[in-house]
Length: 455
View (cartoon, rainbow, N blue to C red):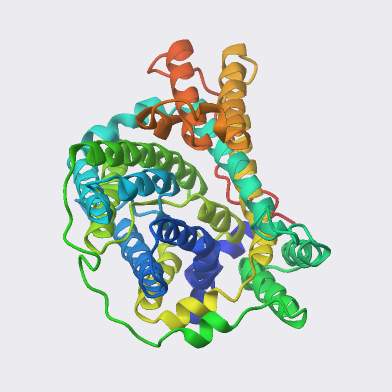
């Protein structure tokens, strides 16, 4: 109780420098996921080095704008939770397919993105009613699935990022990466307040310094990057609209909405806020606006990033001012390529060490939600959890299982989070209907923000 009271005071009376540091933590937590999408898509569409540099910068700027839209809660849009938005990774394959399709090309990608964003914006009220499909047994399963499916990403980064590389999993990568993880654990065990809140940032800085002494920090991108560039709408051409491309991206948008719903519900638990259908509708409208902005600036569709949930939980700082700083920093980085290049100094395996802790906390959050709110003595609930988590993990480990299906269907099943979430929703409807299963009485200690953090 004393520790919890200290955390509340700390959140209310935080020094601006501390808020700034916490914002940097959120940027670093989502940065790798944000830049990997333009790197993959730009590479597959044969972008020049100059085009790829612009694509990464505009992507980060759009991430910042999308984040600010989501935390700016008003009567029309914005969930008002401490969420970060980034590129929807499930859109990568469809965008590459559209871009390489004869008669379409890159302009068709952005036309389809704009149309899908408009679709989400217009039908957000309908999506808001999805809350009936997310009782605790589904929400807890979805959050657990998110954690389970993200952990392999962390381990891949810990090994160096490229599994085909000869130095993947080298002693250097593992020693520094696990060193970052150990430092984060020790800071959470032996420190309190601000130091514990920025434990991830300290770990990333220390890991990068260690990698620098080992000669494994590349400064070439920093030297070559310019200090300022101007962004412009439709930089890569005027959007064109094709029915098949639009339908494909609408399917991707629906997938993103389903994934964001689980994140919204998880964060609602962390900040002790009941999420209503109207809250979800405002969140979906903000996401639709973000997708349209991505299309206008020739960037990408945007969705709520689940990896930042772990950071909110670990830092126990639940206020939106930190996310405002993070979103503003992303906008600034979008105008200043030098800053974007500076964040690229952090080696992949250093990020991987920190991601193990963050993604693991997402997993533990889901487990706690299930144990506190769901009657685990009911066989039906156990079966829902078992099948949904198994499907999410299975598709993540064996993604080629659905490779023979049509592309329009594969979008909905070749993502572990989506496949597992869909399984949980359908099985809950089958066993419990829309009323949901009988739930446990809520425990006196509500919320998930203090998992593994109490002395």
